[in-house]
Image (tube, rainbow, N blue to C red):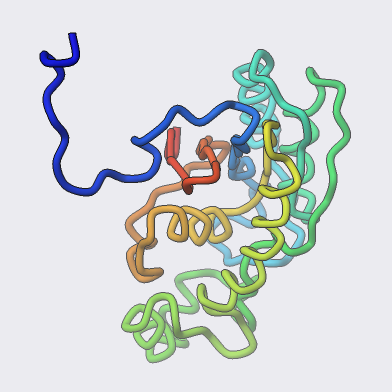
Amino acid sequence: MSDRVPSVTGDLPKFALRIVPRSEITRVHLVRHGVVSDEWRDRVYGQLDAPLSEKGLAQAEALSARMASTPLDFIYASDLCRALDTARAIARPHALEVSAVPAFREASYGHWQGRRWMDILSEDADEVRAIYADFGGARMKDGESLAELGQRVMPAFREIVERHRGESVAIASHGGVIRVILADALRMELAATARIEQFNCSLNVLDYGPEGVRVRLVNG
């Protein structure tokens, strides 16, 4: 039989060289929060504690039903209420408590927070252009860049991955937070994360093992 197996030449990725036992893998379900209340529509909220709307609560319940049969051992969330309430809906069928992690807050948008996006475009056009010219490195006054967001998020995220080897966790957070995690997993430049869509209550699934990470689902 062996003479019928084709030879393999060149370097293979480590994950292709052996079947990794489930006990060595941390499965992470990254969830963006639901839609926020109407008074925040068209506004930049960042780290302001904008609550879920009725639609956002319904989205969280629908995702909870979708994930009811998904094995979950622990659930984490940003400490902002829109992420916490999304996580609590997911946790309910599993009878799990939600652990709040301040490091998973959305990026701070500084003096833009609470303002309408159209007003920002007209009043701070030069600042907007500068940020999009260096998407990832630049930031608005008193805010955070994506690079700074990653420096805050990734140590806490990696600690959870290491703590839960062989387990499955969910993390309810924000679009910017999820994008920097995906950029790290996919070895992308932060500037490229502008092309990664994250709908409200979308699901991303990543497996972390000794040979690295495999992205199983994005914006699902």
